[in-house]
Image (cartoon, one colour):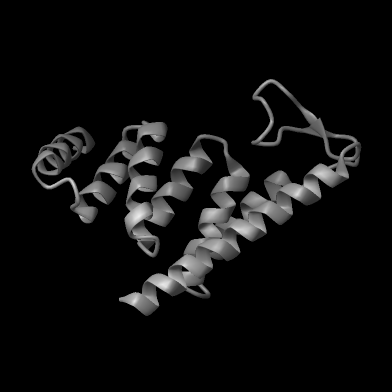
Length: 155
């Protein structure tokens, strides 16, 4: 079923490359096929032209999460939450992911998504890096909210 959706979307996009809904559907179908990197690329392309597209934002967050890019996924889930305030499922997903990136013990090595895959970062030994990553995630969320507000104002 997902493969058929991918083929149909790609055929349609060959004729109408700017059709946002088809590109979102393609991204979601690729996630269904566990093709997370191509899904990420499709959904990021949607967000370049439609930064407020909730389905693309949530799809991108899902793809990033499945790729293990937890901090980046949290940023996207928070962006979605700015569009649909007080969504209990989104709030729970964000809380669950944030618990994954919190240190469980002061000396436990925890991988950080911006580090090389084989590199482990000891959060207790590098609290400035952890704070910087958290601040960056917050700034990315703020910037996305600004883009969404501008897009809504122009619509």
